[in-house]
Image 1 (tube, rainbow, N blue to C red):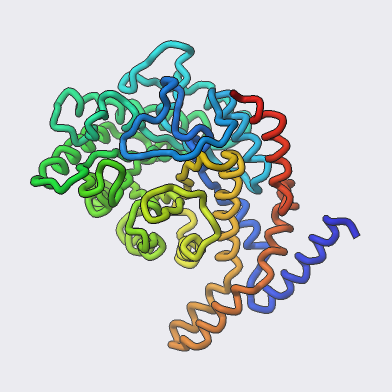
Image 2 (cartoon, rainbow, N blue to C red):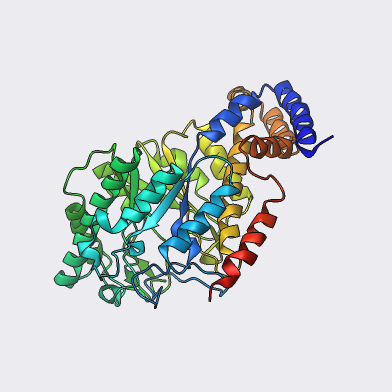
Length: 421
């Protein structure tokens, strides 16, 4: 029997097992195929961007490692993304940072960026038929050297970054119009103090003023959706971050913006799964940045962990798929960067598949009837159900490899990445 035949046979057996639990596998796969994951461009070049040869120069983030083959241009980065997409089932998105503008050799300051400076990205996205998301870049810049941007007490610095935020929203709207899909434009700033501040209030008052100015112009949500991302601490802001989770939670509820929950931006033992249903009681939509922090916000490649599964289960169990935008956010320069994209995205999809293959209605019924014994037993039995056979079939049906995908990446590394100096 051929490998495809074996995969089909295993899938049919798995489908029967799931049907016995009341799970419609075909419906689950159809749902999964409609969930886009937004891949983060900055994994491909260690958050370097194209503004200068210096690359990342601080601002609360750091990439570690020097694995060969880093993308050095937009063309190389897009080629690497194409390779990653080729081993990831489904149709997904790209999450782009402002410092990846391509102004044709002319230096353009961040407060003067325009849609035309991203035309090559838009043309590429059209060619591969995906949507794009966007991020202002409030780091690796002389005007962010002291660690403050939108919360800066220097009015000229603050106004520069406010204008940057304004032009980025217009670029996001341009993406949404050109690609026929709303662009989520997410604001994250590194502002904060390394040591304990004497005044926590004033920087947050300044940040509120700046955000109000950035978002002052109404933009059609069919084109652009505004999001803000909080953080517990960062490099150089260990003791105090102006844009904390609590600050942005209040701001988004008051101003009807999307709250971004980044899995690496909380306490090391704190998961984001439990937060999803809480914030969606008051917000129409949210953004997730799926990452894996290890001891600190180290942005490791996403693995199929209990935390990742819990996040996916919460999204599915709460019927939040249409209200949650899922993006990835990590940058590991110690391994093959294209493989890092594939590993993380495939794991996010696997976690969603596991959640979609739950008999959610049955679990809720048991819980409502206070039959916690049966609920626990069923949850545990689900852990050894043949999800792998369903995943293999899904990959095959999507025209991508299920288990031997890394050989394609290794070939690409040998033929393309290894030739980059």
